[in-house]
Image (cartoon, rainbow, N blue to C red; front, side):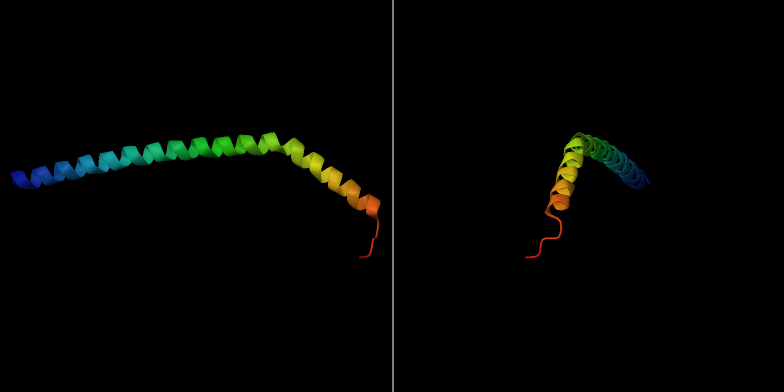
Length: 66
């Protein structure tokens, strides 16, 4: 009976440890997502300007045939 109790307690500790690791991994993932979103937002003005510049170039070239 005592051996069974030790196994159950060991299993409980193992599950608690896994839970802590999983929580830490979730926090890291959330942090990485937030940083990626911030980089996307920071790049938005550049992307919009680049898009407008490419549209202007396309408009000025008209219908060039190669």
